Amino acid sequence: MKILIVGSGGREHAIAVSAAGSPRVDKIYCAPGNAGIGQVAECVPITAMEFDALAAFAKEHEVDFTIIGMDDPLAGGIVDVFEAEGLKVFGPRKNAAVLEGSKAFSKDLMKKYKIPTAAYETFDDPNKALTYLETAKMPIVLKADGLALGKGVLICNTLEEAKAGVKEIMEDKKFGEAGSRMVVEEFMTGREVSVLSFVDGKTIKIMSSAQDHKRAQDGDQGLNTGGMGTFSPSPFYTDEIDAFCKKYIYQPTVDAMAAEGRPYVGVIFFGLMLTEDGPKVLEYNARFGDPEAQVVLPRMKNDMIDVMEACVDGRLDEIDLQFEENAAVCVVLASEGYPVSYEKGFPITGLDAFDSRDDYYCFHAGTACKDGQIVTNGGRVLGVTAKGSDLKEARKKAYEAVEWVKFDNKYMRHDIGKAIEDVEP
Ligand code: AMP
Ligand code: GLY
Image 1 (cartoon, rainbow, N blue to C red):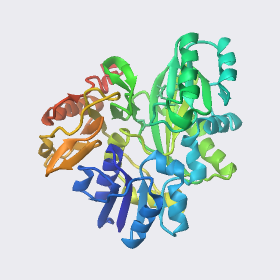
Image 2 (tube, rainbow, N blue to C red):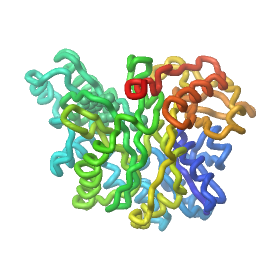
Image 3 (cartoon, helix red, strand yellow):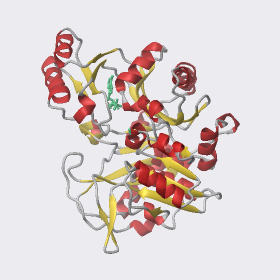
Image 4 (cartoon, rainbow, N blue to C red):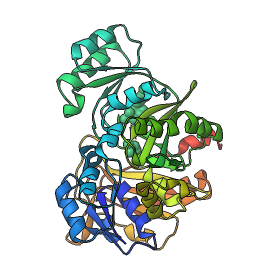
């Protein structure tokens, strides 16, 4: 089989490594890919938003199956373009990817179908939002409606902060057109869990849970980032919580999308908050998480291509989804200064250390190849993942492995997975 993967981050590298592990796969293309993905796939210089060029490439090279990794092309309707050309493609159509693409849509869906989430109001007019905030309880959460690289969320502790937030999102358009509409949401407290799932339109199968660390600095300080590290499974995601979510969140979401005439095929990522009143949905994403994929996929026992194909063919009920009885931790190696400003182009050494070692993975996020040398090329540079018999061992191994890799301005958090000590002292 010939596979095409669309995207260029650590998530797409993890998808490429899983695809390479399938005995059914003979050839992998990745558009546009990165230096690490280039070791398992042929990188194609077409960007993720060039839908027609991508579909033409898939036809010309007789690609059997395309996997869309990123949110922007999904929200833009890449799946519809591929389907119209008769190409087999994994991911939601445009009318279903809106589950991530519009926070107002997803909040209204949850309200209509009684799926637990934070109370909210939606505003198109900044003045109405300001009036509402005058009497609202603080802290409060402001969210730009559209896609904003995971950064369109402001948590405001005071009315002054909230007013400044409305200006930033709706008037200054800090997150672009994503901020023409805004959701104002009740602030929730609790532990966050990421649950990824495969969906075929009617059936949903849950992957092993994970937890991300979104803030830039240790102790959850600093700015929100795309994600600084993950662990899987989450010891806080108990069987009881799983049973609750299956009944009140996961299947109801899939059924709601079908009932709305937007059957969902692909991955749904449930961002959950485990509150005192039970689990509630923080957000939906229409794709694998990054860096959640880097700890979940290496633990999956099934052939990933079999599972994805079953989703597209509407026979996911035939699949027995299984994960290894172990744990994984991923530590992101970033460029000092991320997520604000950082330098690129520094040579990376020590990557060979991963070649001969099972249980260790070095997923490339922002890397490039320059004159035969792999160099830094982004804020998040690499995701170093290790598997262990339990979270403690995986964490120890991941923090050993981050020392093998060297580049100027290397930055990481030192407390990825530290929360597990709360349950496993
Ligand atoms: P989102 O992009 O919606 O996942 O929001 C990014 C981050 O903001 C989440 O991972 C949470 O840490 C935080 N957040 C979002 N919504 C809320 C909320 N209603 N209450 C508390 N924190 C939130
Ligand atoms: N790690 C969070 C995300 O992928 O949105």
